[in-house]
Length: 119
Image 1: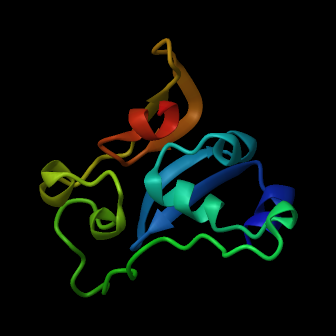
Image 2: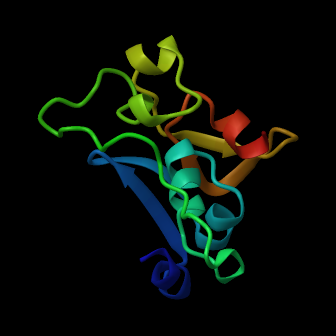
Image 3: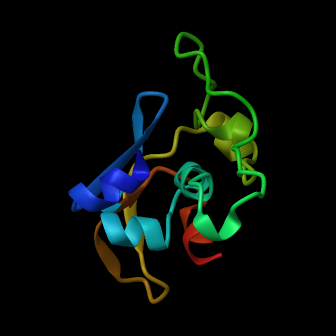
């Protein structure tokens, strides 16, 4: 329950298919995610100002953990996926602000974290 997490946690590690895909201080992650899966999770939270509207859902299905796709496990469901995502596993790297400074505690395992965060 992402609402409860926001009230009780200072830092968050988001996992997909058994792997950490993003870490961040809780308020920074909610305000500006740096991984497409995190962004999708946050978009799927029901909101009072959208009462009566369809809820957002991440397209596709989670992977079979016995047959995780090559590259990034999220690539079959990701709107940003390219051949790079389908072939190379992204490492958990530091996330930088728009000026190139390290954002303390922020990491993303996405080849396109910059576009996700700043796009």
